[in-house]
Image (cartoon, rainbow, N blue to C red; front, side, top):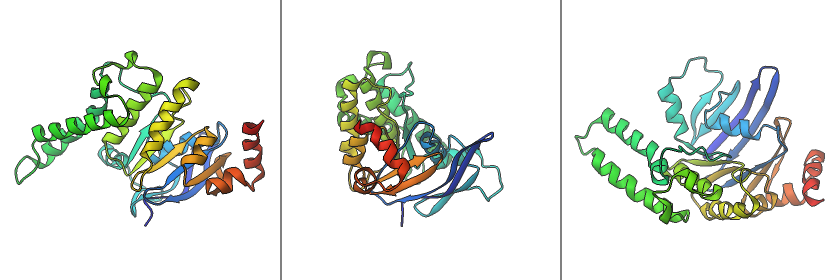
Length: 266
C-alpha cells in the first residue's frame, strides 16, 4: 500500500487554474523530487497536501485513509484539518521560524501544545503519559534532532543569531519533531546564498532512509538526481513527465522537460 496517493487534484485561484488534475503515489521510504519552472504549480501542490490550501477537486489518501475528498460536501472542522496536517511536515522556503523563540523553543512549541491537548482530552489516568513525562521525551527528542542537523551548540540561539543555513536546519528539525508520515520541502535552498546551500542539502540527503518518505520541490537538478527515487516534472499545472531520475533528467521524452533541463546545461 502506498504511503501517499494523490488522485486528480485540482486547484484554482479565481480564473487561474493552477493544478489541472495531479495524479501520483509514493511508497514508504521513497524520495520524490518535483521540478519545473516557476508558476508550474509545485508550491501549490505542497500547500494542498499540507492543507494550507483546500483543493477544488480530487482526493488525498495517506496509508489508505482518505484525508480529503472534494466530492464529500461537508465543512471540515479546524480540529480535523489539524489532525490531517500531522501526517505531513513542511519545510518552507523562508524558514518561517518564530523570531521571539530560540532554536530549541521553535522545535518544541508544536510538540508541547499537542501533548497538552492530548492529555487534556484523554486524562492522565489509565496509564496515560503525564505532561511532565511528555516534556521529558520532547526534550530528549529535540536534543537528538539538534545534534542530527549539526546545531547542538545553537539550542539557545534566536533566529537573528543564526545564518540562513542554520535557520533552515532548525526548520527541518522542527518538521521532524512531529514524526510526520511524509516530509515535504518547498525549495529549501532558494533563500540561501550558494555557500550555505550545501550544508542544507547535506542534511536533507542524510535523512534519506528506508523509512523516511520525502517530497522535495527543488531547482537543484543535480541534487534531485542524486537523492530522488522518482522525479516529477510539472508544467502549467500538470505532470508532464514522471519516472526515475535517469528517465526524466538524463533521458527526458517530453519536449517541455527537454526545454526546461536545457537551461541548466547552457
